[in-house]
Length: 346
Image 1: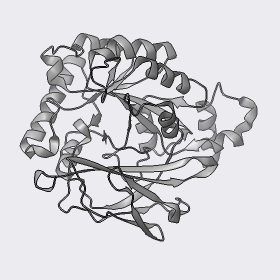
Image 2: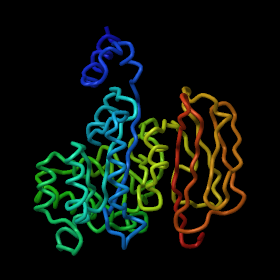
Image 3: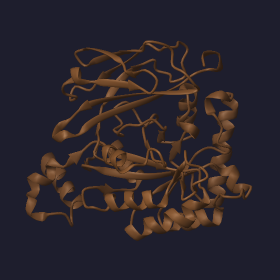
Image 4: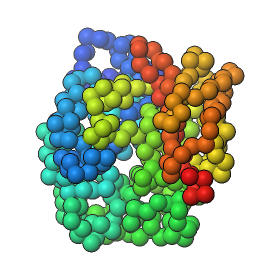
């Protein structure tokens, strides 16, 4: 009976797709993961690190509309994953950080033309102060009325791991109050400004009532290790090529737990980094990990446990290690982690 209910759910999800594939074929498309894309600015070429050129974004939308992908609202994806429900394979969510005006003038009309939902993560103070280049509350209400999701990105968009716990609590409380006053809702979803957080920040985000939170580390969202360090693929002028987009949206999760160090703010540099892959992650010995400074890293696996060693200390305020492993049908599993270095370690 449970299997029948599962398959019927999949049939409803796939209405409009090839019915002749049959019920068993539909069940084969069930997935426990989704890809989340992250954008900021649209057509604002003065800011290349956070901007996507309009011709790039148009090409992204055309690929997402090709029929191979299922673009869903982020809140709906989270609800399904947390309820243990399956998703269609190659499900994608579109997220946009910071509520820049170009979201309203450039991205929204393009998304509407394709019927694609998106979630906008908003820091409330720039909107309250009518800062140039940002959306207004009236414009955000228009997007909300069009059923676009609104998530929180604090009040002032600080480096959250660098402020006190009291200041973190204030950032979350005041911004939530502003959302309730202006939009009539308290967001369920949160995005860490700059993708930065520590264990104390995570606990504050949970206490503030958010059900999921997103960083800026690459990877495929799956919830295997919880919902407060979820990955997104950042898209900008340099990293918004068609090849990278296709690699991301065809990706599969590299599901891990028992990550060490548990906190991304490092006490020790280089970190002694490791994690345990889920039992259904096949061929763990094919795991490969990379860092932009050191390139390919030394990886040792024992069963499902992987230990990654760096030849020297990480450099800069932020550093990433991306790990990949081949999956079925020529697709790649992907897990990325961003580490933050205190001033005395940079």
